[in-house]
Length: 302
Ligand code: AMP
Image (cartoon, rainbow, N blue to C red; front, side, top):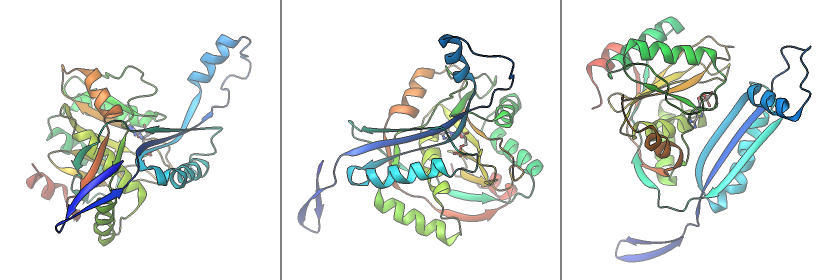
C-alpha cells in the first residue's frame, strides 16, 4: 500500500506494505473423564473432540507484511509457554485486510484500589451497575467466568442477563484490531510511567477499546484465565479501562470475558463488527495512577 503524506510542505511517499490480520489459537484435548467409555466410530470421535478441548491461549492483531514472521514466532512461543499447559494444537491464521481500518482512540487507563477477590467483585458490581447493567446480568457473567474454558467472550444482555452468542463454547472473539507504531510508542511510555508497560495490558486495552466502540456494548468484564495473572478489568465508555488487581486468587484457572449489550439489538451486526471490522488505534488517552472506587464513580470519563 502506498501512502502519500503531506509534511512541512513536502509530499513524502512511504511504502508501508499491506496490512495483515494475524491470529493464534492454542488448545489441547482434555484427558478422558470416563476411561470406560470408548469412542468407536468417527462420528462420536468428532463429537468427543469437540466437547473435550481445553482452550490454552489466543492472540490477534493487525500488522504490516514485514512483521508477519516476527509476530508469528512471538505467538507460537506464547502458545508453547503458557502457564495453562502445553497445547497439542496451534492454529495460526494470516489474512490480508482488504478494507481500510477504522481509526479509534484508546480508552483512558486507571487502576482501581483493590486488595481481595471479594472486594474486586463488589467493585465490578458497582461499576457495571452504574453503567446500566442489572445485578442479574452481572451474576450471570460471574458464573460463566467461574466456569472458565471459553475461547471468546459471552454476549450478555444488560437487563435480562441472556446469552446471545450462537456458539456458547466458542463465544465471540474480538478480532482484526491493532495499534499504529506512533500510538504504540506513546502508550508504552505512558504505561511505563505507571510501571505497567506489558503486552498483556496493551493488548487488552486495544481489545477493550474496540469492544466498547461498538455502540450496543455498554461494558466489558474480563478476568484472565492465566493462573498467575490476577488483574482483571472493567471497560466502558463511561469510565474507560479500569484495571482491578486481585480480582481472583493466584493459581486459579478461572477466567473469561463478558460483553454486556443492550436488549433487543441486532446480534449479527454486533458480532460482525467485533469479529470482522478492522480497527486501528491511532491515538491514546491518559494513563492514570491508582484511584479508589469512590473517586472513579464521582469522576466518570463521559
Ligand atoms: P486472556 O485475557 O487472554 O487470559 O483471556 C481471558 C478470556 O477472555 C479467555 O479465556 C477468553 O474467554 C476471552 N478472550 C480472550 N481473547 C478474546 C478475544 N479476542 N475476544 C473475546 N474474548 C476473548
